[in-house]
Image (cartoon, rainbow, N blue to C red; front, side, top):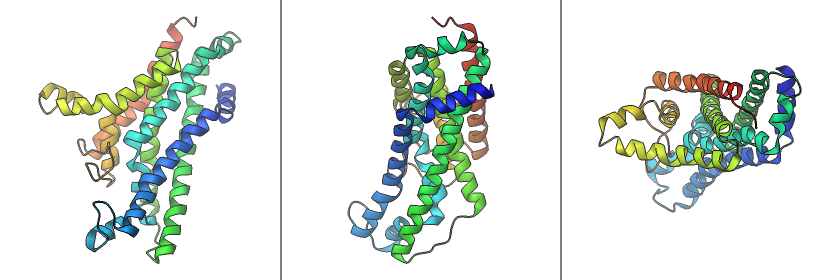
Length: 280
């Protein structure tokens, strides 16, 4: 499995699409976490006035102490959608290029090849989260210096919880995309299904849940609900004036258990599918 992991890490590292997806997440995090809030604070435009409590909240949101909330707020929806794309491409591209058939006829077992690919995907997600933390700390510190505001960094435990939450949520969505790519055997269908599910279907089901109790019960075990609730338990806010996808449906413990369950079950299903299917 180690050789398969090294080979797939090399594949992802040299694949421009992986860098594009990671860069897209970082750009979105910076825009929605810092640029728009800071411009609103400086100009007083939009629905936020720069006087009183609203202005203080806007300034506080771009300071170093708020980094854990900043790096996690966008993960349930925007970050999750991008990781679905990454996972779907990582799995399905091998079918389109014929590389999976070539690799699996050269000797390695299907299980070791798939697990190696999943480990490389996990490393890609971890690298993305690390880059998010470093970039957020750099921008927040710079803005604090410009404004002469509090330079206090978040507590190590809070930063660790934030980074860990971002990693688990993004990894869960990446594994979801990987399973879709494995099932669809093509990037277009896998990416389309993943984006429709993460951005549309779950939101519609939560809306229908207010009318049908059994649908409402179903939504509590969906990946988007678990991810949004886990992020919400850290203090990020959702709703019209917060980050989309952030929820308070589940407790932090329930959300964590559900996300971990998906992180375990999705790879297991993927391995089972690859072991039992025809590669043609």
